[in-house]
Length: 435
Image 1: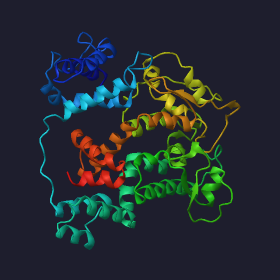
Image 2: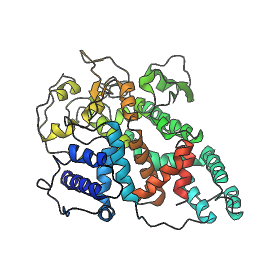
Image 3: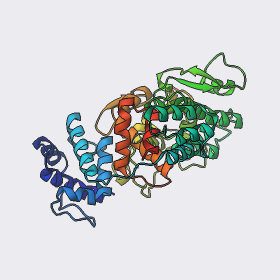
Image 4: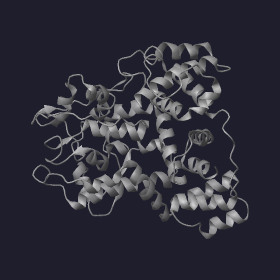
C-alpha cells in the first residue's frame, strides 16, 4: 500500500495541476508537501505514472480513495515531515473528493416499497411492520419528514437491537470480549458477571444514542453510561446497588464515550500471561490500532515479524517509548501514541495513576504533532479530525446495509445530505436507504 500511495500522491499533484478550476495554492501545496518524497523515481507499483488528466482520477478511484482517506485523517505526510496548515488540508481534500465524484453516473431512486424493505432490513434485520407498509403504500416514504418519523420510531423499537448486535458488535469488535481470559492470579476480581456487564454497558449506551437520534460523534463524547452494582464497583462509582442497569453520569471527562468503556479497554489489552507480552498489560499498540481503524478509518499495515522481548516488571508503555528505530517502530509511531492516551486505564479498564511502581505517563501526540495528555485531550485531538470518523462510520454502515463494499461517492453524498441535520442517525439512515 505504501508503494501505491507513493504513485498516487505523484499523480494527485499532476492531476490537480491540470484540473480545470484548480487554484494555484492547491497545486503549490501538493507540490511542496507531497512530491518531494512521493515522486516518479521512487514509485514502484503497477500504475501508470505519466501525467494524468482529470478523467483518469476516476479511472484510478481505488488508489485515490486511499490517498483521500490518509489526508482526511491527517496521517500524511508522515511523522516529522513538514505539513500544510488546516486550510490547505481542507482544500486538498475537497478538491480530490470533487474530482472523484465528478462524472459518477446517477442511480435510479428506489420506490417506497423498496425503501421500506431496506429500512426494516437495516434497522430490524426483518420485514417491515404494518405501519411502515402503510406509509409505503400511501407513497409517503419519499417525504423526508415522514421517512425521518418512521426511522425514529423504528430506532425506539426494541427490534433495533438487531442493528446494535448485527452492525456495531462486529464493527467495533465487541465480540472479542468473549474471548478474553484474564489471569486469575493477577485479576482475581474478574468473573463472568463482570464480563457480561461490560458488554451490556456498551450495548445499552449505543442503543440510547440511536434511540435519542444523536450526532454519531457523541459515541465518543457522551458524558453518561450504564452500570449495575457489579460494574459500578469495578469503576469505583458509589451508591449503586442491584443487578439492574441504570443511566449514570460519567465519573469524569476521561470516561466519556466509547474510549472510557471497559469492554473496549479490556479486549484491546493483554490480560493473560500467555500473551506475547509475557505478562498482563494495557497495550498501547492494540488500543492505538483500534482507534486508528475505528475513528480515523485508516488501517495500519500488517505487522512485521519482530523479536520484541518485553522486560518483565517494566511498564509496557514505558518500554515501547524507548524502542530504537526499526521497520516496526517506524510504523508503530503512527498509532502507538494514540494508545498512550489511554494509559490511565489498566488492562480491565479500571482507572489508575501508577503502573506497577511507575507513575502513569498518558502523554502522546498525533501524527501531525498535536500533543495530548490523557483520554480527554486525546478525544479533543481526534475531534479535530471528525470528518474522518463521519466518513468511516457512514462507509461501514452503508457496507452493512448493502452487504458489500460501497462506493465512496455514495458515502460522500449521504454525508452532504445529512450535514444540515447535524449528521443525526436518522439523517444518515435516510440517506442510505434512499440510494
